[in-house]
Image (tube, rainbow, N blue to C red; front, side):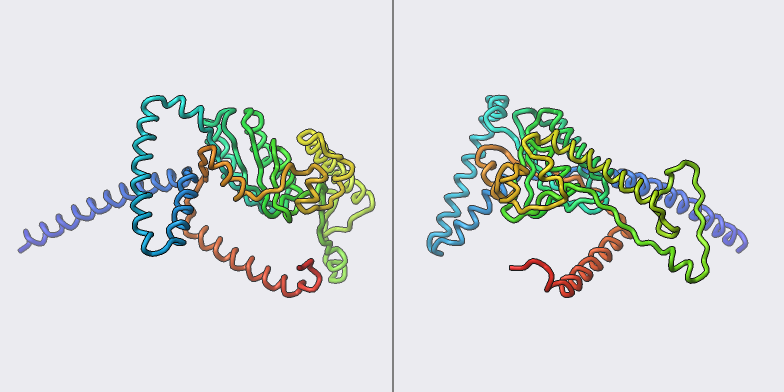
Length: 353
């Protein structure tokens, strides 16, 4: 009996060791997989086939039911025949095929105050530059009302990499490219805007509340210690002096001068003194001021280009952790709620049709 008890304890210990080893190995593999997943991956989608499928679906849907099956068979046979021809042509002369049809790489940038999408944009641009040539084109669908200077300066520099590589760059603005958004857009060789897209806002703004009076009223002292005359000019909690305000305004003016210089360099045709007032214009007005080169939506431009080039949508995706997904969902819900109530509160003051 004692032998059986000792043997049972031995088996239990052995099983415990084996399970512990398996758990350690599994955790190591899981961590390795997580690290590789965190790096993200590229998703490249051919757009020509999407447009063709959309056209075929509309064609079949609008035909009489008696003709639909026959048309589906006809299209299926045509697809198979075309696939065979494409395969033969590719094998026979792949280089000639590349010369006949150029490629269009489509990127998207939806900006916030901190231009957080730049982390994906830099990966997408890097990937495109490994394959794109001067015969190809990069199209960026850009939407941004602007934000922090340094963040949008970096985003603008990412697009400038395409320009420096001598690859044609087109920016399409369907809704808004203002302030930092236009800092990015003006890098392009060609800017296309929807008729009522908001363009411009070439200016600099800074604002902050000051609670010094509230603190004094409640007998709260606030001290700030600095080394360097202009280490801290404006403060939210301390009392701001006229000298501090003057220095802060001078810094804003310096940024504005750099902004104007950037726009003038990228778009020498614009009258910089006329457009660098912080104003915004709608697409058709922006065309008259040479802020954009044409009036056209991104959808229309891509459909037109698909008839003469091969289109590829390039998206860099990074797998979000569970807490990031929950936080993003909560943030989006809060944003929608705030926008809804803001629209209700300001519906009388907003420009409406």
